[in-house]
Every structure is written in structure tokens, then in C-alpha cells.
Length: 249
Image 1: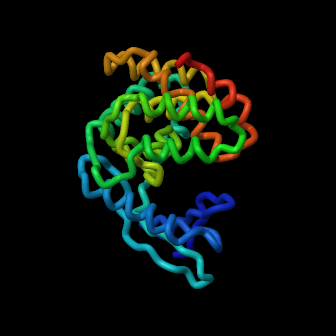
Image 2: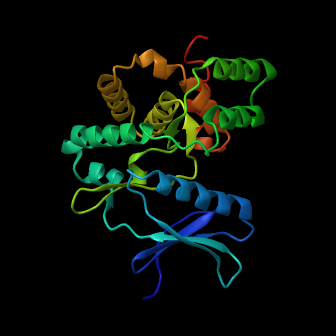
Image 3: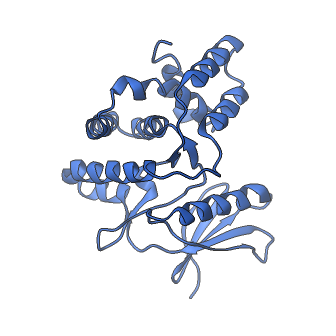
């Protein structure tokens, strides 16, 4: 069977080849990042209890590009289902939050610590003046230290719903161990970039299910906004800069 292109961007292309999904990275993509992505996925697999595509191979293609081969999961993304059936949004968000809580119930001690990763990201942002950078790093240092499994990019586009309703979580490259509220704040941010109302419904639902004070999650918003700035996406800059001072320290 010939490979079928599923998606593509400047860094990688994803193909389907029968029961396999093959992510092919662009020429020059760092080998260390490819191997690290495969390693993180393998460690999440070893935890058990979370449905993720199994990593089957890391290889070099004929053109010299690196690739990662995984099981192909048949189904639709949760983002597609929300677009097709907006009347079911509350049900989809309910399932999404339950899935995120399942992830947060796990631990993976060999993963990078979330606070260490965010500290590096904030330190790298050239747009921040020294005072703002110091303030953000101080806020980060004062946050509670947890070691829960955090996906790091948990959004409807990274959740596959199989025809039987089983949920699979994709793209674990940003996974860390840390504070679950930071993971929730990032998901909220990703929702806000598309739809503020949906973002607010997600946040309210998570806080209701966990008994979490919304202000506890909100304290992470300036930090996740600063970390997101390292991606250098012009269309996100206005919102992210606005959030840098969303909460008083």
C-alpha cells in the first residue's frame, strides 16, 4: 500500500501506511529531538493505563530524513467531532477532562520536570525585559512542586476517538512531570486561541470535577503564556503578551 499523506508542516509530515502511522521529519531536524520524542512515548507506554499509539520503530528514510513509526489509530479527532456535533460539546468536554484526570493520576519519574523546562523557556524569551523575566521566574519558583504526569499539549486535536468510543492520546513529545494545574492552564490557553467560550467551559468543568479554586489554575496563566511565546507564532503574540500580567504576584 502506498503511503497516504495525512498532515504536513515545515518540521514534519505524517503518513499512513496500512496499520502504521509514519512521522517523517524534515532534513536537518535534530536527531536528538527525534530520539527524545520516541523515548518519551516509550516511557508513557510503560506506565500503562493510558491508550496511546505504540512506538514501533525509529529509522532513517532513503532520503536521509529521520522517521518514527507507530500504530495507526482509526477514528476521528475530538476536534473533528466537536466541529461536526457542536450540540454535544458538553459531553465531549466531560470526556476530555476525565481523560486528562486519568493522565494526571499517573507518574513517570524519568521525565523532565515541568518547572525546569518552563524556567529554560522563560529564560530564552528575548522579548522580555530583565524585570519581567525575573518576576516570572520568581513566580514559577514559588509554585507548589508536584510530580504528576502532564501531557503538555492536551487539546482536542491530540485525542483520537475510535468508532467504539475508545479514546487515544497522541503527541507526547512535550510530556513532563509536574503540577497538573500548569497542564490545565496550557489546555485553557490553547482553547482560548480558538474559542474563549469553550475555554471557559473547559476550565469551569475541570475545577468543578476536582474541587480546584480557579485562581489556583489562573496563577499559571502568565507562566504558560510566556512559555508559549518561545514558539514565535505572530498570530498568538497579542493574546500571550496580554496574559503575562493577568494575575498579581
